Length: 599
Image 1 (spheres, rainbow, N blue to C red):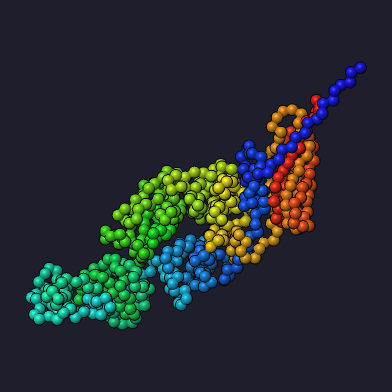
Image 2 (cartoon, rainbow, N blue to C red; image 1 turned 120 degrees about the horizontal axis):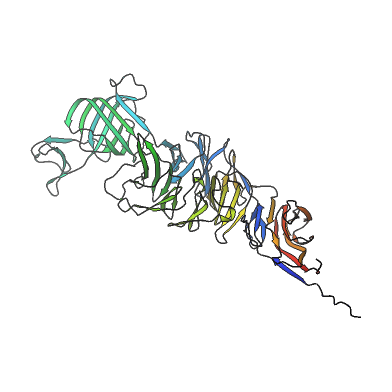
């Protein structure tokens, strides 16, 4: 009698020791996760819990509204004030979120259009508005107005660089025996011309004097500083003395500003007025978004004003944020250009030293070194989504932002979507920044939360659902604050550390990949945990939405632990791990067996 031959059951092991990020697409690779919370790729190839964040106190009370950095430290706004380097300055800000732009020694807050001279922080801080205006009227002009400064007389006189009024002769014929440096107003030319005598060459040379406008009466208290460019509107109704030259309205640079006078560079004038209205104003364009590049402020505007569509990009004069309308054909001029793309602007940033302006379906990059060489290069590509301008951030050699099609990155010539693993299409309003060479962004779509993209490995990790409306990099740390927060949160842990971090991660569906008698008999998870950390594991079988407990590990010391998990027979399964405290999963090994014919 022959006995049946019993075939030995085969056994095999398969280990996953390299873990990626989150991937919500229908089919994902082993080592990637369908969902996660508070995981990081910093300790690749392990699956690790993110580091603890820190809580950083900020002077003052009330919710934070703006965030930037200066000299390696955070700059914040809240209420009506800004805090820079531990110094809080009341700038008269309004409520609502702010965008902070720093150019040279000046800090600007938008949309309030206020500025702070950072060089004055150690003394009396100098603040102002980009919309400053002062009206000076003679005593008898529109006496019913109370919102103006009243003065008695206005003297318009030629002066030298020190502001000293010039003494000069005026005649048709050339003066005889003049002294070196003497001034003469030549009436023999049309119009008259001011000349200065040079004894070394025995000639009269043309000179361009400055004009000093002096007022008699109370001190002016002008809200402008020397060096600013303002529009001066002259409306003269009565002249008391003098016949040379006239005041013309236009843009002027304030060479000097005194208590009762100011000096401008203008054609020769020597007159006395007792009926006048002089208005000084900063005529800076309204802008939707502002950035700084090449020692200029850059802005963009899309609107319809008085039936006319405005669709323009602007730049201030070089080194002068008050001058936006100087077009003298020189390299320091201001700049303006119209663009032909549809729709509103959605954001602005500086990338590789050049300003970049976004619309939802177009990206405008301004190239060139001076107004004569500036040109706007337009790329038809996914731009920043509306209400996501705070998501624009430079990381490495790319500019990242949230677009209508998902998170995108711009190389300078084209853009590509990098958020396919998070889902297709719009991911909601966003704010983002750079953190340790990675892009961190808070998305508000169907799966809201803070996500981190690693450009080197092209992986995404989800942290948690914390609110974040502004990010900034300051020194080696990245900070953010959420809606209503009165403190900053540090990504790297600066400040008071948070408690143990809760975490979780879920695999996609796992199967043997073949049809036959094989089944998974056991999973072995190898991990390292900190003291008091905890990790629990659950199994979901054959797509049934129920997580079956499979084991828990609680650490009493730092060390490595292995947890064997026995599985019941199934076609597919998913693994979920969750816990609290620092944990690194080194590997997951599954043992496969081959069943009998009956199985």
